[in-house]
Picture 1 (cartoon, rainbow over the protein chains, first blue to last red):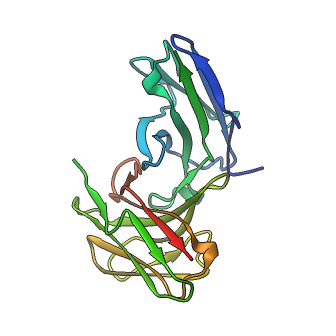
Picture 2 (tube, chains in turn orange, green):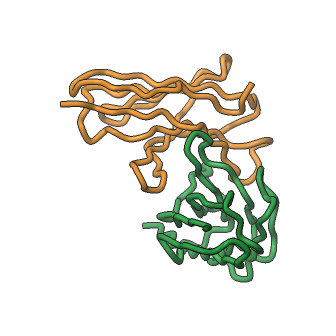
Length: 112
Length: 113
């Protein structure tokens, strides 16, 4: 099983659609979970951390299921500006000192 | 705001040249990282450092070395550049306390001809 595995994508959706990304991780000892966003030819930037209880930030909702080692990101009412690659990120083996494992990303294109 | 800067946005070097990529962060972070990012392969960790003069190999250290003489600066060195090192190189930093969020520099797109 790959360390962090994401939906392959790409996802092409119309404006206003709801879209969900899924991610699984292999290290059951991981303690920190994130979704990063990366625009074309730019660096990754933190979109949101993912907490055990689930968390919401405006149109974005992140969920964590530790038992299944599964993370999700839901985007409601998609905007053109949401077009980007979304990276699922988990902290590394033994949770050692900030070593993060990045998924390969899922590309989202929101069309008018 | 955390700021991570990298010395060049674009760099073109010849095969066999020694290449230095510099990264500086201004937030007194202990941990610094070098990644490369290639289409279809995602971000891969080359080296990281927990403190000055400390370094640890990541997943793909072959052909690279690093230097951390000062806390704010982490350098990636390609001793003898090869065409398969053409890539986007990203530096990141994170404090030792907290939830491990990494802050990235803008990246250096290196082409080796």
